[in-house]
Length: 68
Image (cartoon, rainbow, N blue to C red; front, side):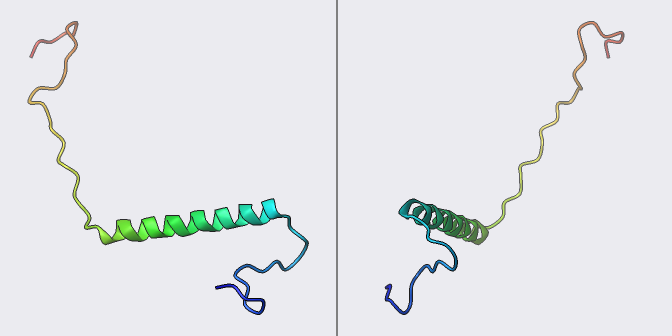
């Protein structure tokens, strides 16, 4: 865990308050969660999309000039 000689998070400049440190921790956890989700998605096999279904006749307006 955390010791005085080996901190988990170190502030290099300034004196952040508790709220600022909490915001940084939340941001780091969000990035770590995204990486885990991306790794999980990469482990799943890629699936092809289904082929589009085409109608035998293209749509024609009832008011079209031809009635093919």
